[in-house]
Amino acid sequence: MAGRAAVPEVIWARPERTGRGPKPAYTRADIAAAAVRIADAQGLDAVSMRHVAAELGCGTMSLYNYVPRKEDLHELMVDAVSGEHEQWEPSGDWRADMLRIGRQTRELMHRHPWLPRLMSPVYGFSPNALRYLEHCLACLDPLDMTYGMKMQLVGMLNGVVTMYVSNELATAERTRSLPWSAEQENAARIGYLGSQVATGAYPRMAAAFSEDPGPIDLEAVFAFALERVLDAFAPKG
Amino acid sequence: MAGRAAVPEVIWARPERTGRGPKPAYTRADIAAAAVRIADAQGLDAVSMRHVAAELGCGTMSLYNYVPRKEDLHELMVDAVSGEHEQWEPSGDWRADMLRIGRQTRELMHRHPWLPRLMSPVYGFSPNALRYLEHCLACLDPLDMTYGMKMQLVGMLNGVVTMYVSNELATAERTRSLPWSAEQENAARIGYLGSQVATGAYPRMAAAFSEDPGPIDLEAVFAFALERVLDAFAPKG
DNA sequence: CGTAGTTACGTACACCGTACGTAGTGCGCT
DNA sequence: AGCGCACTACGTACGGTGTACGTAACTACG
Image 1 (cartoon, rainbow over the protein chains, first blue to last red):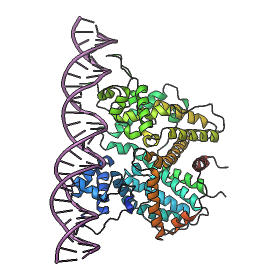
Image 2: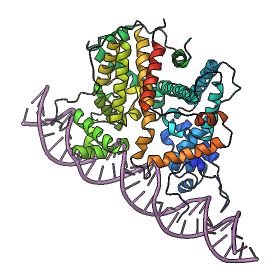
Image 3: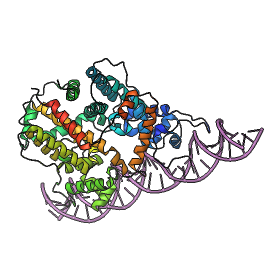
């Protein structure tokens, strides 16, 4: 009987070091950092067990001593970059604090464009996720509502940020690893869209597209969306 | 030089039939239906080119005559189930209509649990997506705002629905194809969470978990979130 | 009627996650 | 002190993936 559990496993519940046997050559942080480095440079799809092992300088199968499944590697990555979340003394203005948190999450995701794809509620229990959550709740102290509702607010904020950044990155992310440029693909899609709208089958869409959009400011659109979410949860006056 | 374009391609811009050569044995709808059948029954990961081809009853490589890349197969799938969106004469009450649309999307995603994972803004131009968008805009006719803003509203609604359903399905989806039950994994995670919270490092999280949540009604939580989103966009007054 | 463009599909390649077996290492217990 | 066992390390191998390429059959157009 090997030491491997045949039972559900949360990697965080696994001790990183058990005293017996030779000292491990790498820490979890080393491994996460290597995987993050690859994902940042070559995209999430380049994060394979083989690549990460090579980046670390060990054999492929040695990685499995540290990370039982690839999914756990992903969990490690998410936790690692979650540690980049800056924390501060709550200002007393919960709205301002939440906006700042949202903006920071957006920057984090721009720095690590693979993050939105890995974001999962299941990963909400990692050490850095817990620190982050506690910080959010601290910022919401001035707000008079149940913790359950505050959790919903944080979830909604995170979700909306993730959603918006996904949209922002949707085309940029594809640039990597695709033989043609994102602009070309975009042009093809827009061209098709135009031809469809021109058939007259979608009058309102036609109107929407003939409307002058003005300069599109992604930052402004993002900030607007965040404000809307906070509005929705603010106590009515 | 083969007929394959070395240039960006939108599958919808490709004619399904070009007159020359033998008549194709399958339609795009056939292929999409086969892929959807597999995804519904065995999960998204079971949707491989080989499986879909086998489901259709043709050789693997024959599929590539219809679908140049696997990504296009996904696009076909999303479009196919988007066709299940019921459309109706706008009631004049935009809020009620939007709620109905949101609820319907949720049901759609419960019927096809792989949908949230495939949802991408890039797929927004497929035929059924256009019909859907036009319907949404029609329901928003009573609302006095720019089409740009209405598009944002629809995007936000879709995003929030996707996000909520993802959460609802996060554990259920994992049940399939995993050797242990989702309950076991959940228990492991909750156990670890409890042990962390018990350290006292996260006082607010501790408070949040000691709070009596009452009965958790997923439907109610979902409806609440939708109302909040609509509130956020409703004209103030 | 030829021929060009299409359909059909078998073979092959590079890559993936990971099960399994083996060898070496050093802590903990007796 | 020294035995034993849990651990690290890692090579090999298997079954899967997406898809490039080559070949044969077929049909609508010039």
